[in-house]
Amino acid sequence: MTRVTPWAVYAAAVTSTVPARSGPASMPAARSAGSQRVLDAALELFAEHGFDGTSLQDIADRLGVTKAAVYYHFHTKDEILRALVQPAFAELMAIVTEEERRPARAGRVVEVGRYVDYLLRHRRVAVWLARDAAAMTRAVVTDQATEVRERTEAMLVGSEADGLSRIWAAATLQALAGGLVAAPPDATDAWLREELTEVGAHLIAGYRKAVRRREG
Amino acid sequence: MTRVTPWAVYAAAVTSTVPARSGPASMPAARSAGSQRVLDAALELFAEHGFDGTSLQDIADRLGVTKAAVYYHFHTKDEILRALVQPAFAELMAIVTEEERRPARAGRVVEVGRYVDYLLRHRRVAVWLARDAAAMTRAVVTDQATEVRERTEAMLVGSEADGLSRIWAAATLQALAGGLVAAPPDATDAWLREELTEVGAHLIAGYRKAVRRREG
DNA sequence: GCGGCACCTAGCCGATCGGCAAGGAGACTA
DNA sequence: TAGTCTCCTTGCCGATCGGCTAGGTGCCGC
Image (cartoon, rainbow over all chains, first blue to last red; front, side):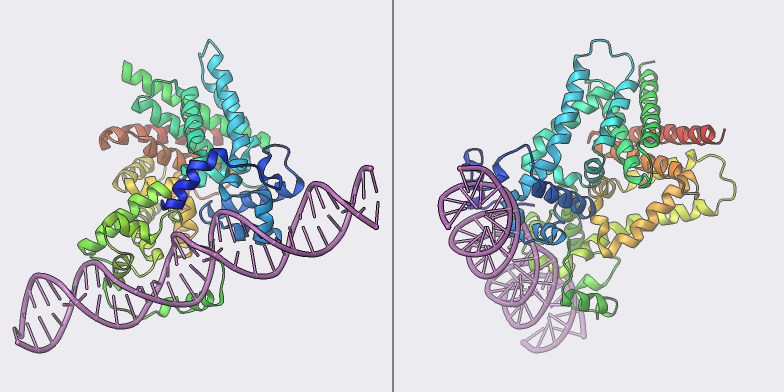
């Protein structure tokens, strides 16, 4: 937990107006090879020990460089977090937005398939976040994380957000992520896609049945 | 991540023979009221910010005491972790062991029901660990955690441990935990039990179907 | 050959980390 | 009243945390 100090209050106040400094840390896209190596090492370590359980020194050690070299590419630890998470979030947001526009929403199984494909594309990030939800409480990502999670749940079970829907939606998302985590390393994407889609489809079918039971 | 220092190596070497000190930290059971208050505060904070994201100072602050007061009850942070996790693990081990002895194992749905009941009894711990799996990489609990997880999975899908079974087992456990996390605070245990059991039963049925599909 | 840029190191900063020794307040009992 | 026990405080320790400055090396186009 970050303890609030006078300095931290000041830093938060000027966060949005911090000027650009030397180094590529200020440019968001088009990562250099060095920056990408930092992200790869960080993702590996975050997945293993969690965000809070990994220090900048750990990342530097894995790369065989000093801590300041990491600082050159990303000026804060939160910047690494954001860089790792942002592409995955952006893509999921796009998928959900597209599905929201679709008028007829008879079956949610199609959406499950799209979500499974998405998970497989961002497998490493998904495996990490499935075991380290605490990282999403960081201020830099928490709003995005909450929004994307809520809208994804709504994509699967509708936006009513009653207790029943919430449970089944969360269960479905967690089941898919959990299956991904437990998957053997040599499992092909095609096989994983088939199995996970079936897991999700079963849960969506179960949800519909539960709704019918409650209404009937 | 804990960096290995010469001192840490020494400490690990003498861990098993560390002598009893003053204070109740050496007695495992029969917690005093003060110790229980520490555990309650710690569990709340761990669930919110994760184990690594919570400092002993945070726990002390929540209780309105000093850090050393926490130290009086538990001499290390790992000791708090162990104290929180151990009862839940022990109970699950007992359940799994009992189910392993049962000769006929036609349907796993009964086991799902027992597991759901177990989750509801240890709801706060379960919600915490579902979002903070990184805490289970700590040396004090990692062996127990791995064993209890593997045997619980085996209880649900058998001990073959092929890729298909592993995925469905992990998906089932994660789905139940995820449903628990997403449950509204005012949800009754009886209602939760019903819904979660149905979630688990659906997944077990899906697993059986997947096995039949693969074999046939 | 020279300025400029990308990339990295050495070394430091204040803050916070988990952990610990010494001692005191208060209740209870012999 | 003296001794003891529980529970907590003050105050400190070395280590590590995230973050930062100044400086250097090597490659680039000019």
